[in-house]
Amino acid sequence: TNLIEWLLEKGRSDYGFENVFLAADCWKELADATVDSPLGRSLWHHLVNVADFRPKGAAFDNTGIVDTRQEARRISALQIRIRAIVAIGSTFPKDARAAAWLKDSALTRSNWAMRQAAIRTLGKGWRHSSDMRDWLIMFATTEDNHDVREAAVHEIGGEIQPLVTGSRASGKRISIAT
Image 1 (cartoon, rainbow, N blue to C red):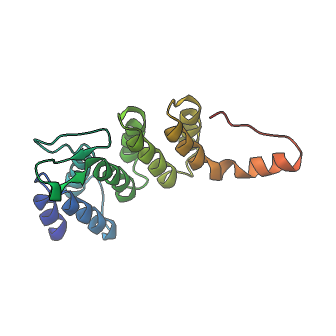
Image 2: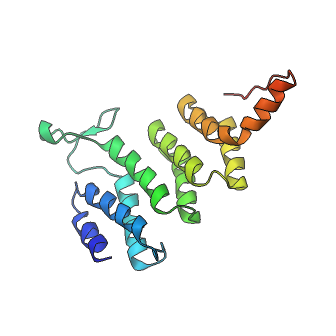
């Protein structure tokens, strides 16, 4: 836990997100890790902050490229934010708060790629939950963005595959609205 605390302390700078990701990887190795512990809450907050990463004084374009101050230090804020979304799901698997946060991200993030990452993370971490399956089906039928909707259909695909196979065998065609 000392290493995780040290990594999180170093993760407070504008570009300390790699330390936060390392701390999350270390956290996964702890047998007695609980999100309700002070360290778990700290890691949670650091990951959420990275998911909202916007460095000071940086310019954004449509792809999320930031930090025009030095070309050599150009980074993709979008890729960092997506990585944080995935890390939240993999660091706190089966946690109801993580699922709720990911659902909220899928519904409210302004960038479609971040919303898509949240959907894929939900599908991987909570796939066997009937409530999550129902939510993904509802999401897939109401989402406007094709790429995000396709991710939801893909994540529920493993669950509905036997139904499609059985219907094809009987000669009936099933169509999923996309």
